[in-house]
Figure 1 (spheres, rainbow, N blue to C red):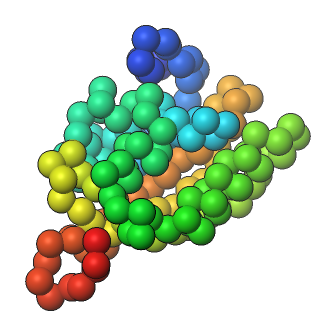
Figure 2 (spheres, rainbow, N blue to C red; figure 1 turned 90 degrees about the vertical axis):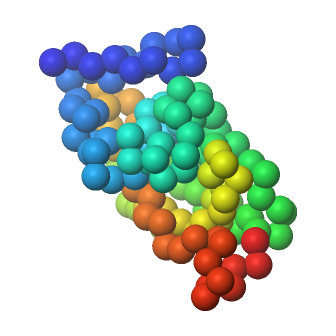
Length: 151
């Protein structure tokens, strides 16, 4: 069946690809547009993990969605640079497969609590359009007394 997703006030046609499979209920995942690092679709589990609604996350840049409000010293500039370079390579013409990129990043939830996440980025083709799929795993809470995070 043909799926469409609402992105801010626009509609992004994702064709016959089963987006529901990419955004499985049991995974904290999102689909991102690589040239702008903009979230196009998010899973329900990601919304629960970050304690924000899909309408609040979709249309945001990755940095605004996950790192807004974090102190500068808590944000990994090298991880952000690696993600940008990967996404830039994904936009190159005739580059079908681009491998994967992983990083460990501090994130901030909608309620202000912080956590550390492992993120795996993978390029995928959807009707000839390159998008980036990210699976995010929560590694630890920022407010746990047994783990020192200095966030």
